[in-house]
Image (tube, rainbow, N blue to C red; front, side, top):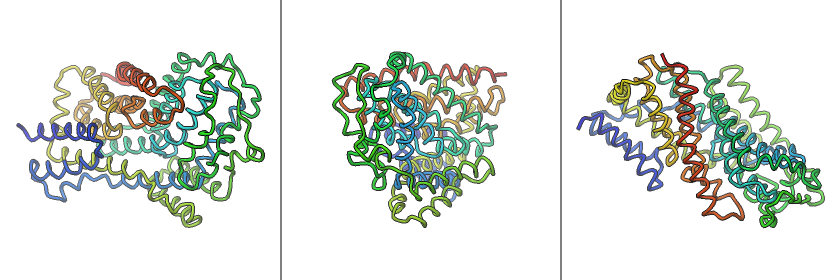
Length: 467
């Protein structure tokens, strides 16, 4: 058996073990890099660590550190409630507010599961209260997270753009962002139309609609107004409202906020720390997009400034950095570096290109990414697939920008699967539902996405660039 084939089989084993045994894929990849690099590729430690993505490490740590501070001091809680106030009793707008909110959170640097974990509990509680389909609300949250997930300063965007730069491929940060945004927006529109959105529009505003903007407030007053302690207050922020589950019709009545609470968004008001955090998030966007500064170093600097000014709010933020994601990405990309060093990437790319039909090879790569990602880590799949496609793209018959965007969308849009982190979070966050039935709904919907979306993004993003 050739060394290249051994290294590919080890990568498959890493994915299988990570999926079936719940072991961090990054840790497995580091072990695989050590074993394959030493025993198969005859590399020393320096050769193995040559593939360690130091720049992406700083981006992941810096951005998630800044966002952890935003959660710890209640800024994200304020953003949630401020967004809900925009509904003003219009039930049909609630799913779209949740879509936009999770999209905004991931676009400014939140890890996709973190954004879903923040928004899903309050979104699914609204679904119960107003008779909105849990499947509609849950999928709107997940697709919203993916819609913003490839902005130039987001985690996914930074990872994919970093890989593209490392592999010296043509890239378009804005094109990647809009490809994911438009794809998820169109899917959300179809879901809204199919899963009861038209009935919600016909319902109009709920009685006492002026208080609908306080729905988050009323629940928030049940013990979660301040997000300083854990950053998970949205899980309880609406937990007090479960009594309307038996009334699925469109006549649910909004719950009034407690006296003295509604005006303050459930106790979550703007204070100096939250104002400074909002300014820091805006500054990050301006620094990266306007001045082309490094996202990771800028985010770390802003986080340190906030930590120095409000140490009590930020004390636990370091512990809330997405270390598991950092380990996953760094491990997978280090193993990919070993594959590149031993020639496996070139070997595999030539094999894909050897199919003889470039468009067929392209759609197969999209389906591989979608199917594996439905059960494993999306970022891990992207970290492995894009480098594997490099020699294939180097032939010049398939446009690299469109192919990378198609791979990215295919590997992330399937996160609605209940076997993925985001899908599991939505399933866990739904109150007063038949979880077995909801699980089956998510599984069927996830299967439809896996079957349909890769072909569509291939048709739209890859085929026009062929030739």
